[in-house]
Length: 324
Image (cartoon, rainbow, N blue to C red; front, side):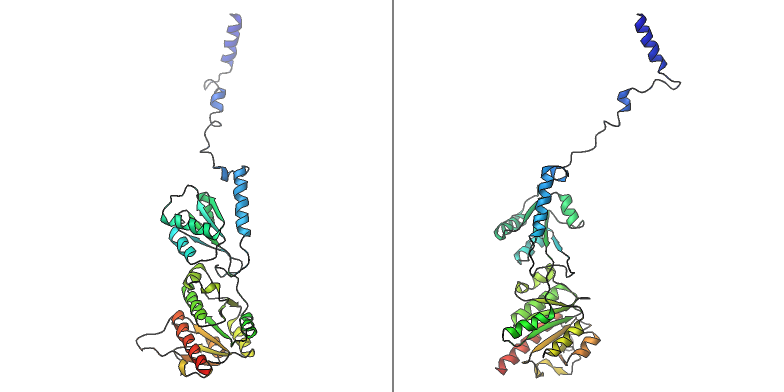
């Protein structure tokens, strides 16, 4: 009994004016509070599944071997295509792919099944990833669980286009674009250039569309066969072509001569096409040996670059056939 009274006395001594001291259970209540759901295995750094997923991503990044592919047009920059419709269209157009990312537990539909089928047939690197990873890759864009990563496009050197033509024993024909900023117009020009036997397309480094997925799709596969070169300075590249023996003809609605009447179309040629409305820049216009026009109805201001290039290239092909 005495021992019990001593213990009760000891307990009373632990009290304060404000009451009893909180016991250990109360002191640790915050420490025992839940910290949310357990992260997925792939999101835990030390987990084997996370290491495996990281290794797979690195392998996919290394699998993009150098080649002409779709990119943003910026040196070393990669491009992503996000969203089910966009991914399906890119794969149907045979846009080169670095890797295909598919969200975990994705809701399957016809588009997803088609994407997976094409990926299997082409042997594309396929990575099943958390949606948080897809959000990071696309910088928060709406991806619907499907993302393609594309390697940067590898541009040729402008001089290589002429060298390849001479090496093949052919009369060089190059198309240069000045101020064309719509990738779809670039893709259309690449398609027309390939159809009419041109040896390549040249775009300036600044203020120009690059070979993105949109340009690649519009080219309808021609981008896989026709090189696109990038010039640091377009006027300088045109002067280099002149020194190599090419006649430089620019297209402009204010030209003094109809293209069909131009006499140099059967010669080594560089055809310069400007943007719709603005046309060629002053310095590029001054560099041209001849500026010609495509006759059109007065009610139409101008043709877009893709159409203008197609019409002009047809006239070049016709003139060369007549000269043979």
